[in-house]
Image 1 (cartoon, rainbow, N blue to C red):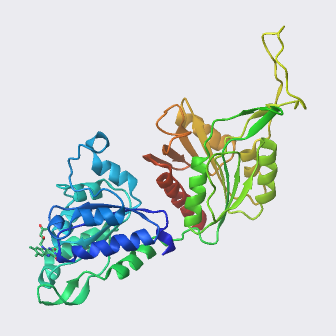
Image 2 (cartoon, rainbow, N blue to C red):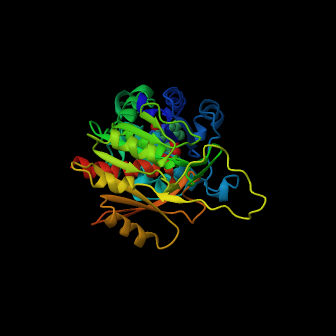
Length: 400
Ligand SMILES: Cc1cc2nc3c(=O)[nH]c(=O)nc-3n(C[C@H](O)[C@H](O)[C@H](O)COP(=O)(O)O)c2cc1C
């Protein structure tokens, strides 16, 4: 179940007999490489102890909506932001009804309401409860909201009845859950991404550079790989490891980045320029270290302009879909729109680098995607999630 590797999975456990099977689900999720956090309803705690699920998941189990220990006492928001997907297994008729009507009167229903991502349910209940019109109507409503429903199965029930309502076996649930991630919308597409800063040497021990951690470009590369694309990542020096499955090309200077991009761009479907490429480099490289002059209080460096990689790519014949980033401190959207037009891009992603909570070294970002016909705002969330949404947006443009 490769699609579950490195995923943050929030498992909701509700109050049904099948709750004991959620221990097995946690074990399978962990074995598949996911990080797991568990929310239990009050009723669920009557069927299985939080301690069991805490020991298996390796994380504290959350049970209370009002959690003074969580950051800002808003555990539901933290958990919703953390999760890549929510799986509720078993899902009782009661919780299904709550989710369907949008109620938030406990931690699980409130977190699910605050979560902007895929939710899967494995219903488990007595066959009469399952057949009831209200349960079926609630499920239909949830399907229209793109909730995925796994099962239930049929057979002898804990209460002695025979019929539909048994929760699927943990492994069956895991297989369905895992394949729900396998939406490889960029399968067959190849993407070239640049990331990190460039370093422009002044002498053997000094250089000028731009601030860039590489996190945004690397997480876009990861999201693109997960969407099935073949990814080439050209990166300046950063302190993070590149994703395993990409063609990784390390460079240092703006000139090296330009050459690497021009060498690898042929045949690519998408180009995403996240690198903070130096606009200027020292005109002359000093072969030996520049000494500090006691008699002079200043040093003048002559800088020369580097070639504009983004503009060069968008001017190519048979150009790919070209995506740029606008890291701005003032007039964010206006400046980004100007850059979109001036550089002939298909999409520009505007982010406000004057806000210390997002951009540069931060794990979070908040961006606006701008094309000539559309503006889409993505609220503050971790770069992993933002990247996934950006890749989804690009895939709609290049696969339609
Ligand atoms: C022994 C026992 C077993 C139960 N099993 C189920 C079940 O399998 N499915 C279900 O929907 N409700 C079941 N219930 C009823 C739920 O526990 C009840 O509706 C509860 O309010 C659900 O709360 P929750 O959805 O917040 O977990 C059971 C109740 C008891 C006492």
